[in-house]
Length: 284
Image (cartoon, rainbow, N blue to C red; front, side, top):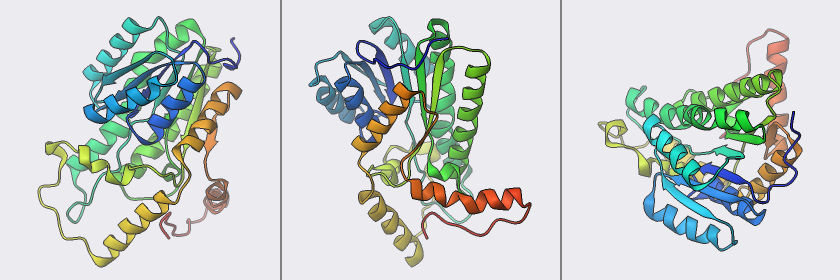
């Protein structure tokens, strides 16, 4: 079994959702470490600008427009990656969306969009790159989950992130049981200064709610609160350093906010004591 990837220079990383936020920070960090980088995103102008930025670090950078929710698009990403580079060593399944304000009740199309991007984007990433990484035995996968994947929330975003946490833990178990040499990390960001609250800018027409309702005063307050805490959160660059360290140290959990981890004690206690959990909201 290969050990952790102590030296990243000369190796290749693939990052989805790489045109902004965390993905762009990952790409910059990897390029600074001497890695070749494949940057994938669904937004063409932003991706072009991001590639130009990462290229300034002097390594080979390729930008590929990709819809991670579409299996064929992910197949094309893998094909273009292997055409450009002999091997992939790091995969960051990072693309994600939050969903938007909908009519009262559950909007099935909106849920499908969020799950397709946040969950199946990860599944497709595993499908198209994992066999190659297992074959050469020198790789590491980082899946971007969220602290929302540990706390309650009746939303598509929460459902998708709980699922990402679960399958990432399952992947780690499988990679270790089979002694593959492929490392696995689960990134669970708290408040980070990204544009996730504005991700509905990329919502497809079929998933857009048929009728939007005027937000209530409470909804407007919570949305503004979310944007404020994100803007005051950690920088994507600081999280990218955590991701880089997790790869070279073969660490599974990447928690950006230890104080949020401490808040999980009450949930875990309710499980151990077989009692009903207390109400909780990350926005309280």
